[in-house]
Image (cartoon, rainbow, N blue to C red; front, side):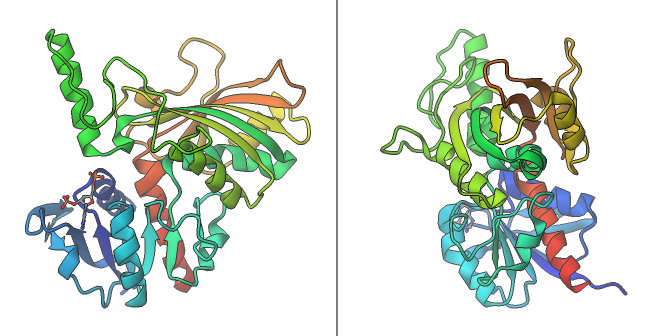
Length: 339
Ligand code: A2P
């Protein structure tokens, strides 16, 4: 019989956790025992996993002994407290929070970009990048490898699922209220999200950027292994349920023609080019990304305002490739080490 693994999903009742379970099943991850964990609030409730029905266990009282791989997506505070405990008990932790991403002894890995980095994990923890960085890296890594990237200028158009289940409910509730001529009360976001765009994600920093924007700076440098890359980001939340979009403008070290860029992108695993110069010949969250794993790239063109500038539009499902799918792909890399 082929080897199976004891897997724990922490935050299994959340938007990302649920998708982690779905992706584990879809990719037929060799699971022996599967523990689904959440807070005391949902402990005891039931989750379907294929033909199995699993009972949600309380993380606070769970004994991690025997867990081979733990996928964490229950927020930064939970990861900080429990990920080291799981690692100490012998599990490889794949953590979707931002708690460890900046630590030098924790690898930050996009499976199609820097998979070899996952092997060097002295603390037993591998960090899963932020969703916006994830899709950006799949699109930019082949270009950086070929000609070097000097500067990235990016504006994101991020869906509400990135904020969590309550934000998705808020968008639905506000939309229904406004269509019925009622007030849309903001609760999760500081201002109305329905029929609006909000130039704000995370917390404000002293330099005027937000924490979500700063993640794009630091995570990009770490994943591409190049601290000289300049990144200028504006994060915008838009009334879309699933799928982040990014208007990306890069300045390469050597001139890259649009034809050569297209060739490089076409050869990149995990990336699909949708780049016809006509109405609808580009990817959008609804028509392409939502529910799917690839990173979609379109609107490729040479920047007329810069001799080494290139523009593109990058779209992916933030819950799948941006979080759950990459986490499961990292788990696959880990088990492949001993296969
Ligand atoms: P619970 O259902 O018990 O609240 P989302 O980001 O989509 O809102 O999901 C957050 C996930 O993290 C949920 O599964 C949630 O479980 C879990 N979670 C939140 N706080 C804790 C905690 N203190 N201990 C364990 N799981 C937690």
